[in-house]
Length: 231
Image (cartoon, rainbow, N blue to C red; front, side):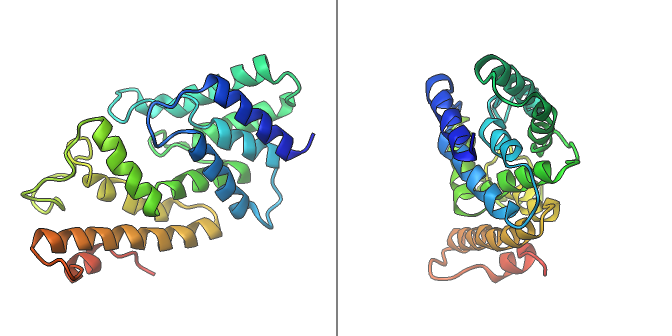
């Protein structure tokens, strides 16, 4: 059975059984992560079925950002994926259960699990690239809106005089997590793409800063210098 056939089966199953808890983790997200993973895997000897399966089910359990059990979501997703594969995909190779579960468990930033395989490293990088760039920017504010979180602290938008708190202000998520993602990339292509994507986020921050100062035609050079990726 070729990889496209598995992908089609997974999509049919998800359309029938999966309901996303937020706009950032729908079926289109799974497709994009898979497409990115294929780019990262080009020229690397990996098991495509393991990567595909992990990409399509890595967020099958997706707890809200403000859930106290959020750090356990990827472990719960791995367990649920094995249950689904056993129950609804009886021909899925049993020897791939553990590699798939590891890739799902390790993809999460909050879980803090170090990927031990090339498949897991690729899935982690692909998912984190989704959090950067234009899509990542849209996701931050979509999730913030769903949780009724303010966009930023009007008195101190870049946390110059207060601790970062991305549960209180959406913009804080850039510094508390997103701008740190390039340093966590584990594949050469992932690192290059992350550096490029994070520049877009920094430009957005600089434009926001300029507008808050009443300058609508320019970027804030101090913000660019402060947050621009190095290298």
